[in-house]
Amino acid sequence: MTRFGIIGGGLMGHGIAVALAQAGHRAGVFDNDPATLAGLGERVGSAVRRTATPGARVEAIGDRVSAVDSLAELAKQADVVIEAVSERLAVKHDVLASLEPHLAPDTPVWTNTSVLSISEVARAMLHPRRLVGVHWWNPPYLIPLVEIAPGAETGPDFVDHAHGLLTELGKTTVRLHRDVPGFIGNRLQFALVREALHLLAEGVCEPGTIDTVVRASVGLRWTAVGPMENADYIGLDLTRAILGSLAPTLSTETHEFPVLDRLLAQERTGRPGGRGLFDWRAGRAEEVAARLEAGIRHNLSGPA
Image (cartoon, rainbow, N blue to C red; front, side, top):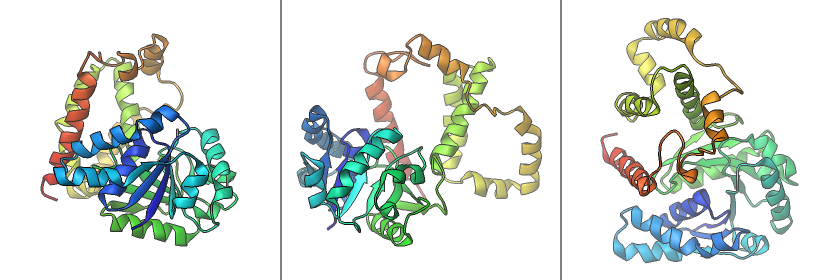
């Protein structure tokens, strides 16, 4: 059993704790917001029940996750520390700088950043060789993928340790050769989001139409055959011809996103504000969350 310390008890932090507890490990969770820490047990229990875990195991899994009231206490208990605070570089720097004086120099630290450079996150550290980018996908207790990336100064032994431990947990692990913001998954995901926003800006269709097309076509295909294998399958000559014709018309925008800026100017922030690209009537958030998790479970139970 490995003892994990998780900094940040929000959406990703508590979900990672559940994933670790499911595999038989203990996770202590620290958050500087007392309300978040006080609600940890309730959120963990709710997540475990949503995984369709047999009733006899629900309590056992929940008992492996505990709240910790300081970084010093977390460091004292942990064999591995996972940083899962907000995606702001300054916040991560402050947290890691506060953490390290309490840690032995060889204690691994994993950052769950999904968009920041691992090398940049490590700049605040006394021992940057211990920092590994370990990106879990939400919800971590359902989605099997974990992406692992080194920073410029990460020691190969720390990458090997993270890969081995996560593989033992039963996760689907991939290793990147080098540090790149967004890892692989978010770069692909937000390239699609950028093109979708471009289609909206050009008046091609409505937001719901884009979702219907993705869910009823490429979304079905990609669970079985990824884009690289599909390119080989249809033939690289055809792939090259399609790209040559289509690529000049695709969005290359890096800063201007008029659809989002217009909605945000109207305080239409999406689910948190009640309206965005869609109207978030009462109960819609819960319906989407349930549909998302049910879809993930369905895809996981299908043929490989």
